[in-house]
Length: 66
Image (cartoon, rainbow, N blue to C red; front, side, top):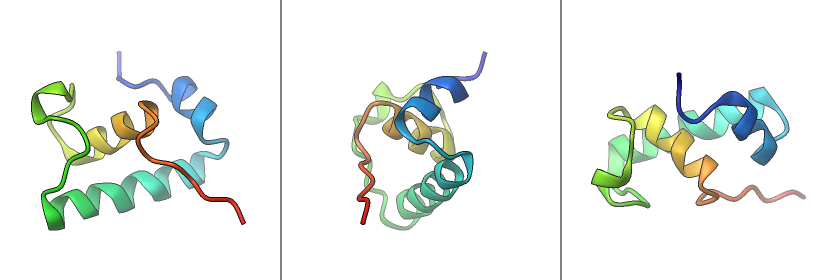
């Protein structure tokens, strides 16, 4: 089973399109800066896109609504 599940992620962010956009931007940021919000051994995913989804699921990434 994929972690985190899409159902859990959609509880945090209501749109699949917004979820993909945020996760891809965060993954690119991780590639460019090497900055991770959790310790590297706490991530279940090896790739940055999975790590970005884990950060969203753990509430480490907030969305500002205008």
